[in-house]
Image (tube, rainbow, N blue to C red; front, side, top):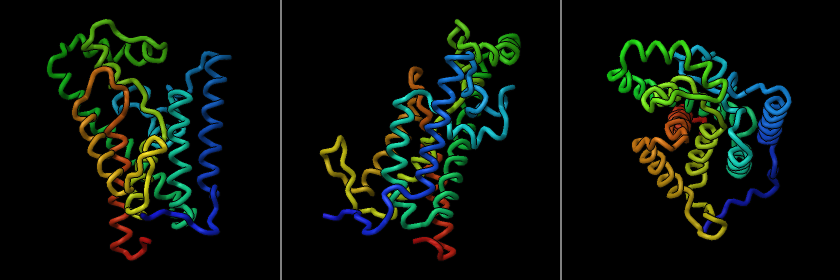
Length: 247
């Protein structure tokens, strides 16, 4: 049985610590602005589809610091601490931070590509009038917390104008890196069931792919963003290995 116990390493290394602080601070600011001023910060900083009137290129970075609720934030921050601390202790702060942002941005890119695929499919059955209604009125409706009654228009508008938020893409990149750095270390599911990291990463990736392909209407999880974090993380690690800079 193998465990990762880095003797003398920091339990809370600097980049992980500052990412935790920044994410928590942004969540508090978002909640305060929403309750006191009815301002939806996630609508401005969350990642919108590139064809939306709400899209801004900076959202490929800012969306990583927005979260949809306390439990969303808690799950991502716990995983960031659990996997990120071990990785930063091995790679150092600069390499860790670069990996975190590349996987997070990459996750956003894959999510947008998947949205483009979804929209192309829906547009084949929309009339020009329906399309124009969504383009002209949909973004503002989403900002006001509303959507169309027609299921097809509602789905089209949600893909086009609902923001993707969360650090999950970058966190899934860290999960992939942990599985490659410490493949025989154990991750305890539900704090009880030990599973080797390499198998955990493999099955979790397959599960996300399955859920993404299923595309259930009531599923609001950005599964392809999660996969994007893992894919870009894997490609970056392969690149580092080729250059001989991977540990």
